[in-house]
Length: 224
Image (cartoon, rainbow, N blue to C red; front, side):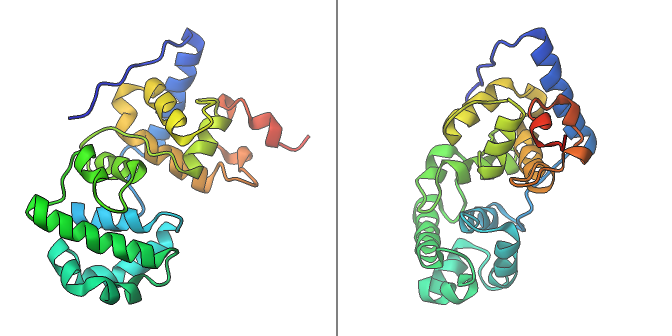
């Protein structure tokens, strides 16, 4: 069961700014989802685990072939580590990821009767599944509101002055405390997609940003 989120006390002006910010994200996409391809909780776990330090595009190319032959823990075990490697060799850290995917499949079969455990504690006990991966899975499946902080979310949160946290965990805690309750399950995707396509690292597209007038950092990037 998800823990209740302790909301942060905000000034009326800041509360209104944040509400408007997420309202605009919602108006652009009311049901955002991961760009990773999956068709079950198990394939989602595998895809997210493979995506660490890799692009969603590269993972989708690999899993398009992989999931045709191994889309369940049992089939993944039958494929084995050496059988899995050729499918994911184009992805960074593929040997470590192959070892973790097979080890996780074994635990799912032996301890969870072949079903992915949809609670944070058991998910994080799986090899290759850390806090961020568990958050992505639980949030994507609408089991538990969570905001997984990757480089995009970290950057956007700071530029929009939603957090001054120095670590992903601190930024996550700040975001969970200020995002409007009704939008918590979707905030992760809005922020990551905004960072991926608009508020990019080197050259943010401030001129076309849908929340530019609400961004305290905009003046730093616009040409004088």
